[in-house]
Length: 418
Image (cartoon, rainbow, N blue to C red; front, side):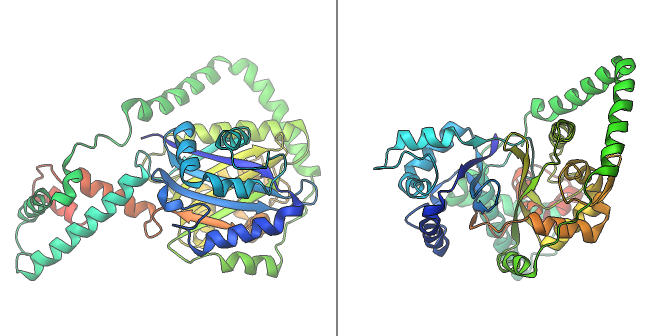
């Protein structure tokens, strides 16, 4: 199952910002089945958001985030079929939109022209479509209820293998669970698992071959970097209490949260080139993360970085589990080098050394930077708001091992998933 991450980015017409706000308020009242964008009617959608970023220099930007299954063509057809007229109303509040009566072909062309694909991204539950995730959650709940009945009937102390067989019989006898009895195949193809490692190996081999050229270039790059790190502005970014209050009001409503930020890339070709290179490398490494974790962080469903405005600004969007504090603590404890390697190229980030050191390890400075650059989503939708990345992985493991023939130890481990 191919999963796609992208955004549609447009400029808001300031004269119509009040109408845009009204539409978002109407959508928020019922995310699943509102008259504008009935998100629940989009079977391939995982997460979506509308965020309006205000900026004195660039003006207001509307970022429409989409994390979905399949190709853009298929998804766009699905999106326009269910929400075309609502999107027409939204983008009629944006600059350069054709306006007039609704025309699906014109809206599709408008959106295609404004697609921004990520420079680097991470998917927590690779290979699981939105429909599969929801089905496997249902399967786990049904099996859990059945196991509770077995325990109530006094069969809970039977051998794990016997309990596993009881569950198999239960699922086979329930016609509503017929879909769970089919072959689901691997989460990723062999190529999807191996190719990223082959690319890394090829990169390492190329670096060894070009070592005589790369060493002088690396020395020059390091010297320029150290000079810039000493002369660039160290101005910290500090979020106001009112801004923090607005963010807090929209967080911790469910087990998942959303983060959206835009930061300014430090001026000059050197910083832009360095950031592009770091994002390229980060994306390559992220393709090897296929067990629900990004560098040891187990809570990210979808996250991505995109360079916008000709590389002058960096957009970051993340859908994650748990609180904002725990999310940033994970980044600091487990991924500070990668985090610093990316954001040390942006204005206001805590001072770094040699691009990847210090920086995010300044906990207070990093959290202040993150809050200051963050903007609350005006609309945010999750197709499975009660599930964490780890829940989804457990549900998949339950289904994948349901019709195996385990020994007693394997059956015991399978039962522990509940």
